[in-house]
Image (cartoon, rainbow, N blue to C red; front, side, top):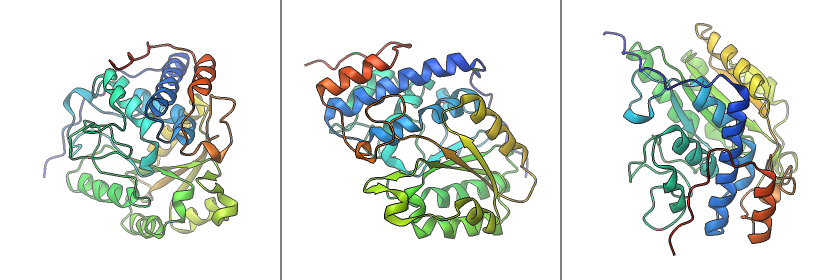
Length: 298
C-alpha cells in the first residue's frame, strides 16, 4: 500500500504575540456566544483557548479549505469533552473552516453549531459527535489504526476534561492504545481540577494521574496550558516520541475561566452564561483583535 500523500499545512503562525492576539479574540467570541443564547459552557472553553489556538495555528497540519472526514494525509483532532464547543467553533471559524459570522447561530434551531459538536449537518472540522463523555479516545484509536494501515505519518490529537477521566471507557481505550502501540496518538487532559459539581478531588479524585497513565503504558508529559511557548515545546516533544511504541498523554494545567477575572478558578462557570453586565465586564478585559462578528439581525 502506498503511503498517504501529506496535506500542505496552513500558514503556521510562529509569533507568540500573534497567537495571544488570536486567543484574546477567541475568548471574546466565547463569552458573546454563550451570552447571546443564555446557554453553553464558558468555563473550560476559556481555559482551553490558548491550547486550541496554538494547536490549530502553529502545530497541526491541516487544510481548512479542503476538509476531509477521513483526514488522510493530515493531522486529525477529536474533542472528547464536547461541551466546550464554543472554543472549538471559534477556533475553526478563525482558521477558515466556515465563516466567522456563523458563530451567531450557536445553539440555535437548525444551526450547524449545536451545543455539543455534531456531524449530521456536515460542519467542516467535525469528525464525530461528542459530548457523551468518555468516547473521544476510542475514536482517536480508530483513526490512529487507520493511519497506520494507510502508512500515513500524520498525528491524531484528542482532548479530554479531567472530570471526564472518571468514565471507564477512557481507561479501556488507554489500554487498547498502549497494547496496539499507537504512538501516533497525542492525548491531552485539561487538568483544571474542576467539574460541573465542584472540585474533581471532591467529586471523585483521580489520584496519581501521572502514575496511572504511565502504568497504562503511555508516555506522560506535563505543561502549563496558558503558556503558549510551553504548549509549542511540549507538543513538539510529544511528536518526537513517535517511534517509541507508546502513545503520549499531556497533562495540561489550566484555570477554568482564564481571561475573565470573575470566572477564573470557579466551577460555577462550567455551564453558566454571563448576564448583560457580566458580558460588558468580560469584554473590557479581553482585547478585540480580529474584529467581533456582527450582532444578528433582529
